[in-house]
Image (cartoon, rainbow, N blue to C red):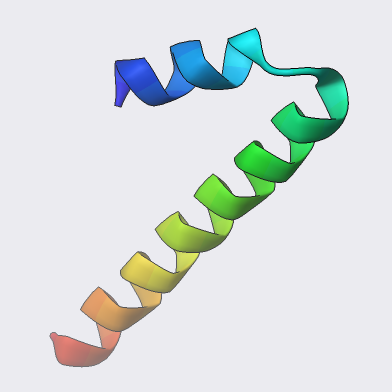
Amino acid sequence: MVRVFFSIAEKTEKEKKKSIAKYVICVIVECSIKNQIT
């Protein structure tokens, strides 16, 4: 998880925002899937 943040920090602002957006979407999807299962 820490490595992900380091790799994001190395990218440009535009790429950083895309990476953060993808990461947030993945987290939201995982949470919604877990909530549906339980």
